[in-house]
Amino acid sequence: MDKYKLKFENNNSKYIQIYNHIKQLIVQGQIKEHEKLPPIRKLADYINVNNATIVKVYELLEKEGYVYKIIGSGTFVSSLNIKNKEQEVNAVNHQHMIHFESGNPSKDMFPLENFKSAINMALEKDGASIFEYDEGKGSEELRDELCTYLKKKKINTNKENIQIISGAQQGIDIVCKGLINYSDVVFVEEPTYNGALEVFKSRGAKVIPIPMLDDGIDIGILKLKLEKIKPKLIYVMPNFQNPTGISYTKYKKKKLIELSEKYDFYILEDDFISDFTFDSEDNLPLKSYDMKNRVIYIKSFSKILMPGLRIGIVDIPKELQKKILWAKYSSDISTPALIQKSMYYYMKYYNWEEYLKSIDKLYTKKYKQTKALLEESLGDKLKISKSQGGLNFFLELPRGYSSQAFYNFMIQKGVCITPGTYFFDNIMDDRFFRINIANEKIEDIEKGITIIKNNLEEFITSYKNGEPIRSNKIFY
Image (cartoon, rainbow, N blue to C red; front, side, top):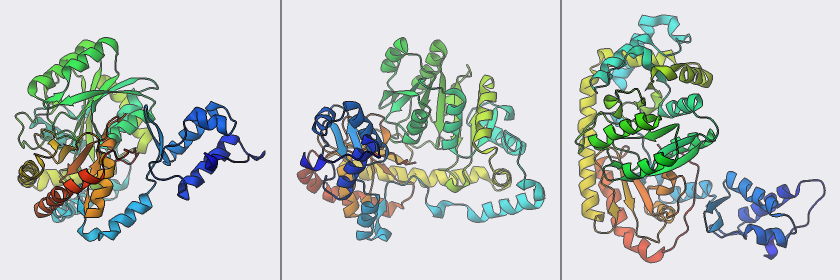
């Protein structure tokens, strides 16, 4: 405890002095990575301050990323090592790193030439007006074209219900701005996309997780929660969920809408890749079953076109449109008209359906080959979630092992995965990790899985009881 002793100065608050002192101990390595800090009461007694001061210090250290908390266990020193991890990556030659953490599509899929032509068409046809602010909901032509696209997914809507957005993340954000107030309850799948978790928490919402089963959300637990708690909305990814790849059955899709009507809450559906069937029996969006106007539908194009375009849509029930339109306006006024018009001309004149078929073929081949490789190489060693398709596979280490320790270990072997801690609000048992196959070619996917297989025994032998850590970094 001697290293925690400090002499207070009168010209600064005590909690700031304690914060700076502990931060220096961490930065200088006098408190090691994953080392547990003293219990609040013990440290408060030792340096003669009240408990609330130490609580405040630990909260600030956590906010700044120096420590992480494990409920029931205490406060621990974080890796702190964005810089260190970059050095680790460079040490194994970044050019040869297998990237299973990136959700961005491979650049060789981008339809650059056709989209370049669509941009030129937009500039020629619309002229200088394309650089003005557009109407609040977005380009009328694009919204009309998107209605035609959605009808093929059995979503019968009209352009008045559609808001153009700058990507799915903004869609989640503006829905929350429009609907969620401090202390409102939001149900989420567990695990789920952590970008959504961060938005809900930033609005002061109380997040309640509902476990995922192999065929979708656990309806039994959901009903038990609904009997006691009324949520404002529930956030779901019914097709090829991120991070598990699980899809809901038709029964569960219909049941969720039925429950939303009975218990009077909205469903926020995040659809990023339902365009393709993969192994699922039903890849229709939840919105296609919505006869009660309970589903707020977000459609992102980042995984099926080019993520840098930052374009998507929200299909909004009529009674919520004013609130969400205002939230969009307060975020960025409008999505750039050049992007919107280029998207319209691309969909209209450059064979959008054929393009989707080509991406479907590529993704399906990659998914099926990866699934077979994982089952063959790791199926007898690790539990693999029962994915029905998509770009993500969620794997489970044996009990007692940390996915964060596995992440650090695999980085040194030349493979980058995503620790499962990013997909849980409150992680009690960190042994899950995600593999995303969007970015890598099949030969590199095979190589990466082989590296995991060949090094798994060494990890299991050497890393039992590794400490889990938390991070606020968002993975897509």
